[in-house]
Image (cartoon, rainbow over all chains, first blue to last red; front, top):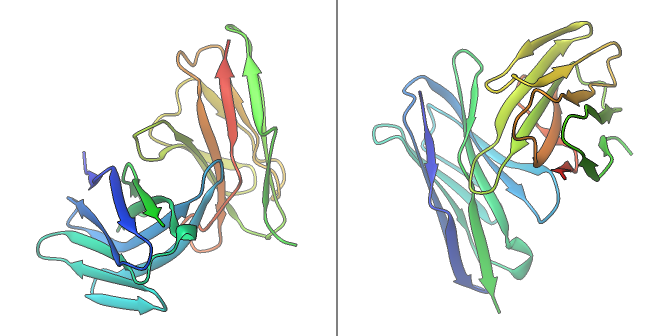
Length: 110
Length: 111
């Protein structure tokens, strides 16, 4: 089946930039998404990018998409302790099926 | 305040029992979803419903059942046929076909 893969852990210092990476295998992906999950809570949709775009910026968040390599990244500028959470990458294909990655746990150290 | 509520937050079940997890939304969304989350794994879709009185199996529907009698409500029953039910269960809703709003989740533990 199609897969979405992410590294499980990332640790950065407060004020640094964080880059969370994701790879996917489904070449029919139409939209790609980033969700944030804080401890014991549900997921919050952070941002998304259409598959024919290569970059989207929203305040401190920058999403980069390399469609040829099927690689998606989320950059968080000036990372704060409140950004500590699990970040999920997800993709939707033309059948409207969604696949989620396992999530990357971001730890921000003061 | 609009949103999705799930109850209870924690649920304990003895082996062989059926339990029902509640999910309610007041967002007027047509589509609702149930996901299961296990440590170190992504979310896996159990069931989804795009309109009242209709629902479809997701990737891991075995051992689960749902109903959608009202637009606002999409309860999930974990039956005794589900062999490994201990997990975190998330309900979501959407208006555009992509899960956009998630509830706070129910953690189910089998004793």
